[in-house]
Image (cartoon, rainbow, N blue to C red):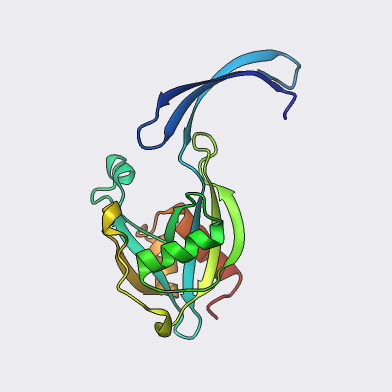
Length: 193
C-alpha cells in the first residue's frame, strides 16, 4: 500500500458493459500537503494480444474490425487494423491468446511467447495487456476465423507483408497502440529477417 494515499472511496457510476467507478482519495504531495482528488476509472478486466508472424514468408496476421470508440472519435469508417486480442475472462494470458487466435484468425497455435505487459491508458483504464508473439504457417489454419457469431464479431483476417505493415504505421492505416507495439517489437528483435 502506498502511504501517500488514504481515505479511498469508490462509487459505481455505471455497471452496464464494464464498470465505471468514481474514486475520491487523499493524496500527499511532495511538499507534505494532503489534497483531496477525484478520478474516474474504467474497469474492463485485463487482456492479452498476439502477433502471429511467419519468418519464411515475412508476413504477419492482423485483423480488421469495427470499433465504435474510434468511430465517435473521428475515424470515419470506425474500422481498425489490429493484432488478435481478447479479455482474459478468468483464463491465464497464454490460454487467452491461444483461444482468441483460433476464434479470430482461424489459426491453431499450441504455444505463445510472452514478450511484455503494459498498461495502455493508466490515467483512466485499469486494464493491463499481456503481449505475445508466435510463429504461424499454413498447416496451422483450421478455419476462416472471423470471431464468434455469439459475440456478434465481424472480423476480417489479413495476411500482410511485414514491411508493408510497418509502412501502414507510418501512413496512418494502423493506429492501434498494441499493434504498433508488437510490430515494433518484431522489428527491433528481428523476428522476420
